[in-house]
Length: 120
Image (tube, rainbow, N blue to C red; front, side, top):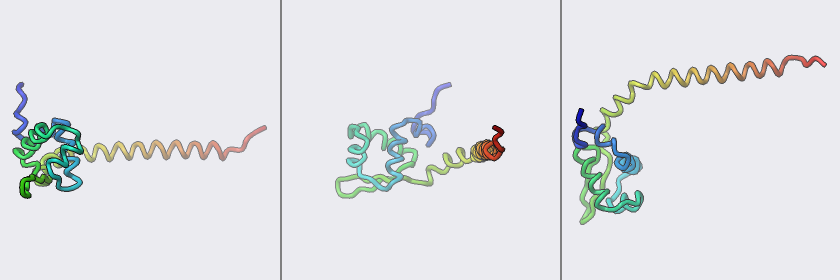
């Protein structure tokens, strides 16, 4: 089965690690392209290409400030991704409860063992 174009939806767009890095950086606040370039230590054409893809799926919004372009996250475009990942929350919660229960049981066994009188 052929893969969908990266500009088709948010899932395909963020399949690229550099785009996820850009989104992580923008999660901290709006950034100019040159700031993104210097932070990620990539070439400006490469960053611009990734920003174009993110713009096409509406994951980022752009604002022109003079000759600069500043990008920020468009949280509304990330909703489908959040909804999809949220379905696994109960699984993670159950796993954490199981880990906590196992750790508490082990701690109790160690306390019980330490409380036993030592026979010489």
